Length: 630
Image (tube, rainbow, N blue to C red; front, side, top):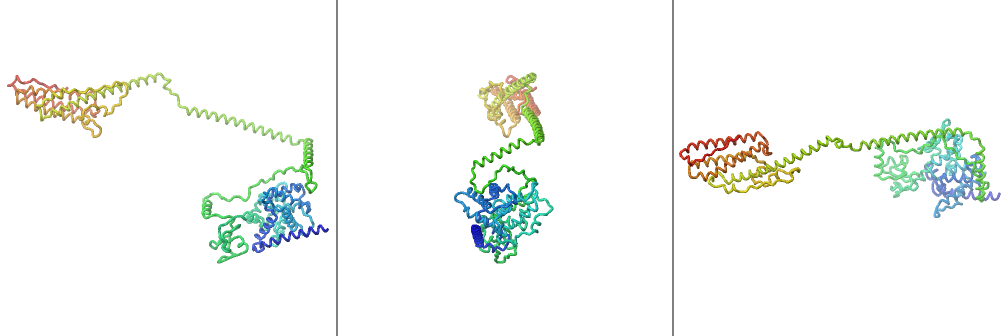
């Protein structure tokens, strides 16, 4: 009796200490009940170091203490509850680094006294397992999604459908936490609160349960639960913005911006306590921010949001299957018979081995009723595998066939000319004909070059024997050697003479006449030469008439011009048989030859008339006649 009284005194002292520290935070000055309740429960969570424990650590502690195999309505003593809390915090200290160790005894005492004040205010010293699981799952840290999934597993049936009576009991026990921090008037339990969350006749699955409790806004009776997790997420968020009321240069946690006042922002402490300045009023609509974005980032986010076709908003939670997973068979788990952890490890292993051996023997004695079904399933699977293998072989064969077809198409076609002797013979004949034509072309080029050289010599004679000096003797020019053209030894090869190469060795007048650029007309040059010959012949005839003793001296001039006239006629005949590239039109060549022949005939007739006039001096006359052109 004395021990119970001492324990009760310690409990009241620890609870009083927790309340004193919570009042020192001035949390009651927060004007909004939702934020006030969430801040108080967050303070209790951090004071008891439960913010370092997630739902999975709590479930592991339940398993180690055998609570997973016990009925939810079974009662749990205070001592057993203390063991569960000891397991949670001692395991936490093992996970924490040595520099961040917690005071385990103090955390256990504070949390135990808080739970007893909330769920055992009369001091019975007992509470149900369902209450312990619900309370610890609600107030521990971690993700709210994992916590709600665990809570749903406790209030749903084997088909994965929520039991409304179980949810009503959960809501009754969960709302005792706000009542423990003196927020019962705002979040006390009522039967109407349970009916407003879910319709009584509707089947509630896990996805529906999560959609309802994680919606924005959530049910009014549980609005403090998601807000407590949001507080935990924004505690270390930094906002480089000055508060418009307290004028702090930066703020931590939530940031609130007025939707009516320009650039009016408040920190969470000023907003929660209703502070306002200037034209701002507490009745203005405020927007809550949980992060800070620079103006450039805001602009890019707005542009991406406006340009995106689909909604970028992610779902609140992933979709889970309607049917729950098959639970694990935990029948072989050995329950601890004593609260102390002094059992021998070897004895525990022996008990596990004995339980597993018994389960194996029972499995062998059991009649395999589902064997035919399993055999049929295996047969179907083997058939399916055989069909897939056959299809795979067909696909591989088709791939091989297409690969070969592609390789054949990509190869160049065989040379058909190598297989046909007739085509080979024709090809050889064409090559021989080509070589002959090239040789003939080379010969013609050489002949043309020789003619050009001779023409150059004759034109030089024309220049030296002008009409103004008929008495000068051209014998010194006639006897000059004519350069002989050099024949190429490689006549069979393909000639590569250019127009400039074919005129090499020819004098400047001919090269100027046949040079590139403004081309001269060779026919005009020949006509000029013929006119010059005609004038010279006329002068010679006059001189013959004037003197009788000078015919021998002038006969050399006559012979020279006669030779030049014959060469011009020979050259024109040569061009008629082998057309030169310098005469582009055959009609022009023929007309030029006719004019030249006509002029020569006129000169011959004139010469004959002069001969008749000189009948008195027949001994000095020279019988001279010109050949007619044919």
